[in-house]
Length: 130
Image 1 (cartoon, rainbow, N blue to C red):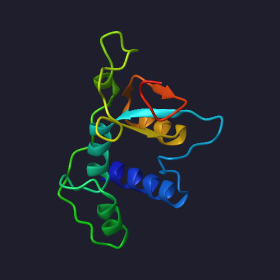
Image 2: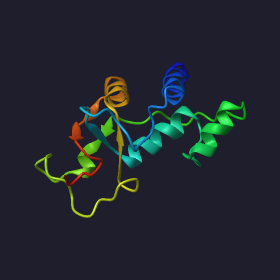
Image 3: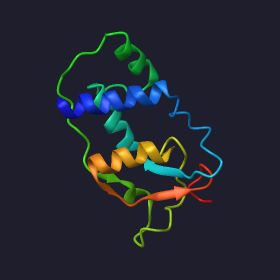
Image 4: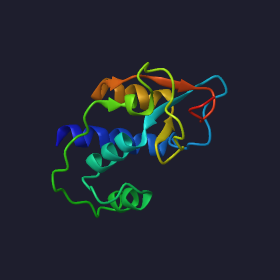
């Protein structure tokens, strides 16, 4: 429960700072690519809701409609699912939001320190193939 609360506090702070916007990062910053399934698992964990990982769930939580069923924390970040065996080349036909998402350095660093895993994948644009 302590881990869930710490992660939720971090997520709430990021929301307040508007750092979840997937359309913008700083001009000299990079996108940190993360497996969409892993990120969905993390969101389900922090909001204890395996059935929803949408902003509507976030909104319900913020207004006090949360409940706890003990959804388990995610395993280490699994970005290897996005790459071929060399762990550098992206698998073919992966789609943004369906297979991967982009986060800023602050968010990725927090998640990586907390859960481990990888590998780290960075891009100048929110496109795994550029």
